[in-house]
Image (cartoon, rainbow, N blue to C red; front, side, top):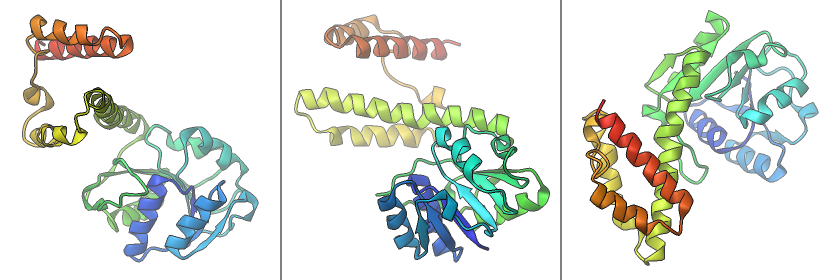
Length: 255
C-alpha cells in the first residue's frame, strides 16, 4: 500500500513510526515546515515535500494529520485522485472531505501524543469511520496492525468522545500546570504530587469517577474551601476556577 502522510506533528509521528515497525511504510511526507518534513521523513526513510503540488497523485491512502483549522484548506488544494482520504481528527466529521474526494475515512486514535515520547499503541482505542464497507475494512486492517482495540464510531458520537477526552486529558493536564505554579512559588518540587496523581488515575480503573472523588468539595467543607479561596485572593482567575470546580464536584456528589 502506498501511503502519503500529510502532516508531521505529534500524532502523525507516532502513528507512522508504529506503522513502520509493523511493516507498513509511508511513501512520502508533506509538511509546510521543511525541518519537520525532513525530520519525519528521515525517521521513516521516505521522500518529503513542502509543496502540495509535489504530493504524489497515485497513492492508495492519504493520511491527513493536521490542525482542524487547516484540514479543509489543505484538502481543497490537493488534486482529486482515486486514493482513500483519511483524517485523524476527533472533532471533524467524515463529510469534511465530501467536496474533494469520493473515498473518505477517519482513523482517530484516542491518546495524547508527543514527538519526544514514543508510546505503545497496542492498548490505544482506534475509532474508525468510512463511507464504504471496503474502505472501512482497509482502515480496520491498518488500525489492527498497531492496536488491539479497534472500533467503528460515527462522526456525531466521535465528536462527543473528543469533548469528553478534552475534559479527561487536556483540562486535567492544565490543572497539573496550575498546581506546579503554586508549588514553584513555595519552592516545592512538582514530583511530590506524582504518587497522588498516579493513585488518582489508577483508582478510576477500578471505581467510577464519582466513586473515586475525594476532598473537601464533596461535602463542601467551607472551613477548608474558604481558607483556600483566601490564599488565592491575588489570583482572581485561579480563585474563580477553584470555586467553580468545587461547586461542580459538590453538585455531582449530591445528585
